[in-house]
Length: 133
Image 1 (cartoon, rainbow, N blue to C red):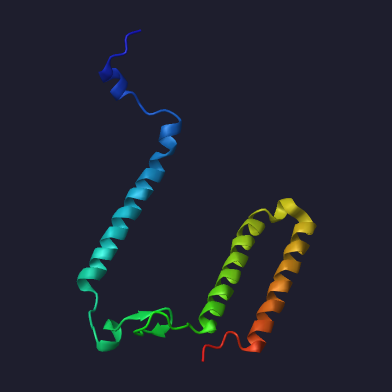
Image 2 (cartoon, rainbow, N blue to C red):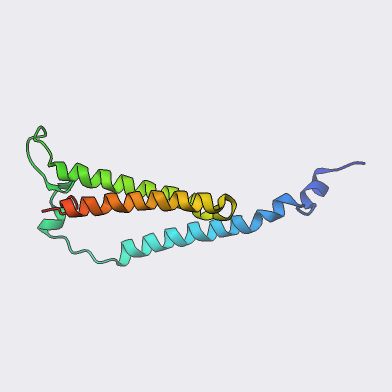
């Protein structure tokens, strides 16, 4: 059987490639819409610069001249608390997806984990670790 290149090019897509066409269209629309929205906000967005917006700001502190000054420990405490609660969410997503498969043991294990996390959060709250000033 002789398959010339023109017959091969005109052959319909079969099976696996047809399944991905919808995803390709979705990615194209999402990419185009995101570029359009960014350009629209850049062109028609309000621009009201003032001295406060244009001043350098970093890490929750006003800019200072000496780079060797010590940072307040509260900044690091808030950062560590953010990482802890961010990891909690990373554990909750897979747990929520496979809850039917892991049964009651998995449910009560996560209940113990969330209880310990809540006790730690209440302890930090009572000690004033979440107060910035």
